[in-house]
Image (spheres, rainbow, N blue to C red):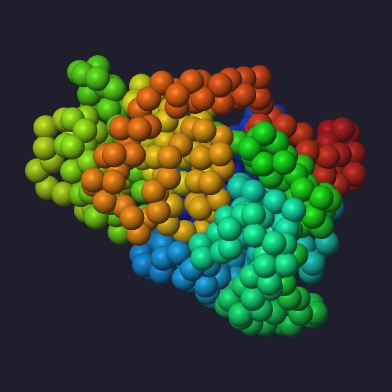
Length: 422
């Protein structure tokens, strides 16, 4: 089977597709991955055939847009950037698609793949990494500026209608429908509510215990579990980190996520929080310019460390609420303090809190004093017991294999016949 993986976003969006690509390749399939040039080295490290879908410069330009992390402004900013780059993405991926042979697997934001499917007629699987991506009135997700989860259903319907009509469709619709018109395709609307779900297959890469599939989700949805790929085997735990872990009590790890390029205040606040609770700390970011100079004793900066190797040895993880980070922390059985800023982070934070493995601080209330107080509460026996039980739910799960299986079911019949003949 020939598979083209298409993903748009930060490391948190790319990692699952790298892991999935490696799993598909191990099962004997030919795999290409279309991704921004910022991730070229990682894709090649993983042994995947790389297709450039945008320059490193364009990635950095988008990543440094401050509106991407400003609550209600974030969705508009994301859609605006997405629309502007749709045509370039379409032109990058279509030469690598052969109808009748290729299966395309695309991330939520890879709308160019959905347009290509409508034009070229090939099987497409859409992968959504978090439940917040699904519009549901039965189990409404928590979103920036949105109504309380338990608000009446008509309120949720109204808020979503307003978001579609006045935010999402105006931001991405003109570019999307302009491309469709040039390709001889009719216009579409309700892009986030309906269009970004492939009519062939929708994969939720999270387990049923994290979010049940709802009756108002697309009926072609299958849940396969958290992907949990974190570069282990490609980039292992740095020696200086292993040394630091062995030199004292378990530290607290702080990260605002790989997509956060403006986290200076986040780290300054957490250095002060560590001082208040007399804890060692690890500041985790690839962007060294965010880290204050002359860190105090007991605090180190690390560009990157695989969570699966790091988190089992720490006291707690303080983070933004990204789905990949949240899943790794649950699997490691580590307590979490979440400061959501935008996108699906609010919904993930709410789910972690309901599971009893996290405490949450609204970003506007984020101070060293508040963080230290919440962290003291978090490092208690009650949270430790709950984290242990949630960790047990990961046993015997094979999410990447399960995802491969549902993708293999999409393989065109003539491609299977050709493979069998060979």
